[in-house]
Amino acid sequence: MRILLSLIALSLSLACSPTRDPQIFKAWIAAAPPNAKVLAGYLQIDNPDSQTWTLQGISSPAFARIEMHELNTHNGMMQMREVEQFRIDGGQSLVLAPGRAHLMLKGPKQPLSVGTSVTLTLRLSKGAGNEKLFTIEAPVSHPYKEDSAHEHQSDH
Image (cartoon, rainbow, N blue to C red; front, top):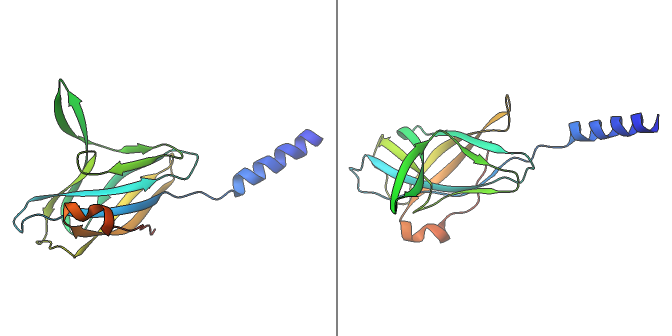
């Protein structure tokens, strides 16, 4: 009987424990000439949960398409390739930064100048059937100002 009560209490506490959503930080878009067809975007996602979250995709009304890319070294050469998703294990972070994994923002619908902000919607999931959308604002900034200009952001 004591074991049964313990199991019931444990299952109730697990069922009632809140989901710890990913936190999105330091989102920014690198400034580019007005006629640029592709821009680069960066951000950091921290996963405070014990379970894995997966970044499934990103969209924005300001761009025709947003791709996620990673960089790898193969035979001494740096290679970039598009990926379908990024996995963020529990307690870990995904950092998209210059010279690392990043976003390719293709087909801007209008020129973007320094100081403007772009709305990005991130689609993250934690297992089957547990998908959430997070909407953030990413300022357009000069790359050398990236570290100081971008604060924590996370809305959903």
